[in-house]
Image (cartoon, rainbow, N blue to C red; front, side):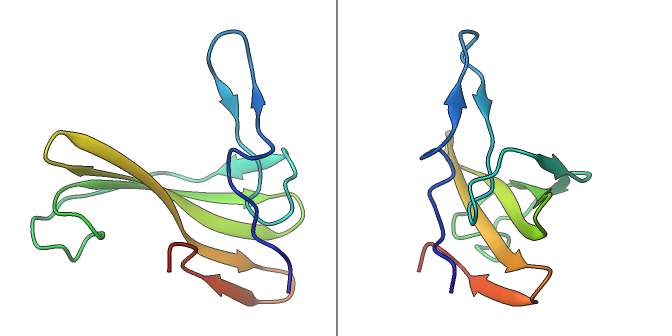
Length: 98
């Protein structure tokens, strides 16, 4: 099974404080995203915290897909990855936080 790499581990930092996003599976920088989904909720069912969450579906040119998430809880914003998959082989890498 392929090793899941940290999203920022191989990232390129630019002078303007931006970060180039890479694939969490293969590390490639040629990634794209689909329309973000803004989800509201106060019952811990939206994400592991209590509050709103923005989920951005991502995919790399090698066929890996994941969701980059931003969860809001009591004045703090948390970021995590979810739904990590290899679309070519239909491998589900699960939740990297567990």
